[in-house]
Length: 325
Image (tube, rainbow, N blue to C red):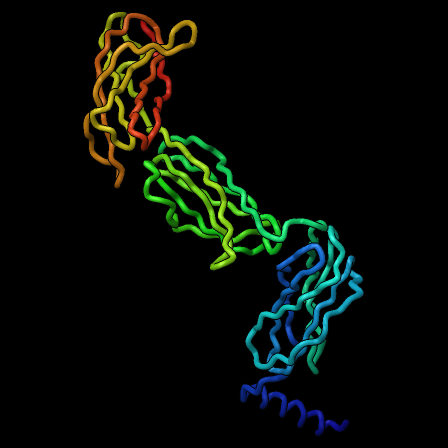
């Protein structure tokens, strides 16, 4: 090749790039999670970017990364947009882990997606899904969270949309969407973190339209949040000490019981007072209490509020020591 020819080719390439001429490129391939996995069948999934050149594709699969089996070639795909692709496979062995990958081919090259695996179900395994549910804490103090989680088992349990539903006390409104959705992971697991404002039943549904699976219900009980403040933690013997605090959410008219721990470890009520309205905390109602007690000896105290209204259960403040001198 002469010096002039090399110069001419370089000049043409530069002009083409400057003019924005699209140059052909090999396709791109991404292997994604398998679905509809049963004892002997599965659907292999992926995505292909043709990059402007007609592109065909197929999946390789088998019990190892040597694969050994290939699905029929499909396509061609056209254009530049990434397109989801899939292929159904059958004749698989039950309870077996399979490797698979997507392969895309055009005139500019052959590209493979990453290796993925799936495991077929046992022979005779259920052909329908089941949905479990549990709460990490079945009882929480108002303002604290708990996690609602479980597993969708059966065929096609990965990547399934799960919706959280709730039915708050007094449980006569039926289950309605809690406004939270997620999708199951590769093992069918899901989880929601919730902050129940009152005693609430939860359940979840998985899938859509006619293929919906519904869990049983799990109940989470919510204690009222009670605080306690002593005006003097080291009073003189016989001094009046002001016991005060608040209750969230508010339960005006209910009784706050001031209790002292006995030598046996039990709690004995030594005084009581009525909850009154106090300024809210944001959008949450709040009640207040206050009571003066004459403290004559060392003691450990708490305040207990039992609403007995069905919306919340009894809550106790943290314990406070009074050291008499």
